[in-house]
Length: 503
Ligand code: DUC
Ligand code: ZN
Ligand code: ZN
Image (cartoon, rainbow, N blue to C red; front, side, top):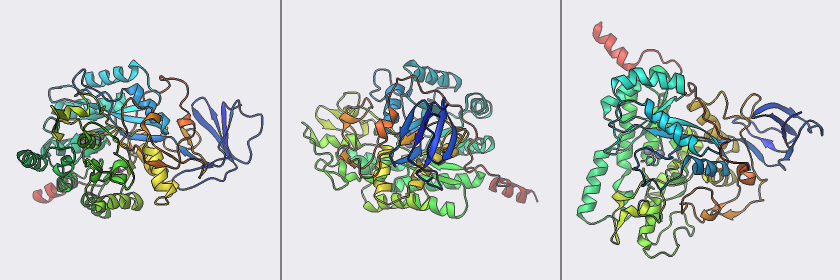
């Protein structure tokens, strides 16, 4: 007798859609059988009729910021692990990977990981979770002694580094040292690629000219800064033959540079996010919206500051060519994984986005960076990707679940509907049954706005992803070595040139 039987749906994998008369038997939290035909009447304690809708593997959102340590106590207006995972679940995401960040003064990563475990466990989580480690002070001890332990004992199999932000950026030599270790250990290295000096120069010029409204943020963080850093990261990776993932790719130039590297069979991978597919910087203008709909038209006392809701980095781009290029990357396979970069701050709060509004004067450089989006990620891609016929539903599964699982070492439990895997399953409505506009009131995060207010969606995970029960159902997931990019590549460029110099 199975605990649950799901039947009469179209089960989707990256390569295949099963016929509608296929059923899934679940016992405990595992998929234990998948069979064709109609399910017998007496095999399940509970039955769910999927009514002909798609059945996809639970979403895996591998780019989520919750309760990070660099935010001063009392200043964090974002989601907690509890509210962030509640929101994730309601949007069909059943696993998140959040960031555990090192600050420059931290000499050991172990206490940080313990602190993140405490934060996540404090009020429980609604879905499963893991941690990436952000490195800002990659000492030899940390690289040689602590990373292997974190990988083996804690199942932390990924690192993020920043090439921007004074407090976080790491230099090229440090990046190379990190790449040598992640290659050796088989960890996934995520890189935030923006040239900080280029960005700072533009910011200084904008400030001298009193151009500090929210929409100037998009000008400050020019695509040139993104492509320069992306190119540099790729060149550094070439020297040591280390796989890297460029996160939140937002511009045509960066996407093409990555595509060129992939064409040369270099292990360069790309992530993008809904905001870079669906919104342009004009949405940040006082009058503006970026997608031809009526977003951003709410009446407030300071309308010109509304654009702060859309401040994220990399920023929304000014040119539709960038948006089109990101779609192209999604369609042609350049994009490996699709995440939300859920990094929210409240809007109407002096420590939230309004930190950038002092005495009625806007200063975009003081606005906390980032958007909420963990709940809207899957419905937006299902609507604007699959149902608007830009990508197949198999590709949807690939970028929202299967490839994230393989990139980040979750493939032993997640990312596919198959016998033995975790029963992380999303049931969608049959086409044509859902049509509504996203409103913040219907979302489950703890933030007072959504950047996607007013976006029409034509599907949503049924019953809000089965959001029933309570926080505390989610558990920490230890990850293993991923399968993407870690195949043996023989000697590195560095080894080759050393060998030739010796000869
Ligand atoms: N980078 C992120 O990954 N998220 C939000 C802000 C940022 O700079
Ligand atoms: Zn980033
Ligand atoms: Zn992020």
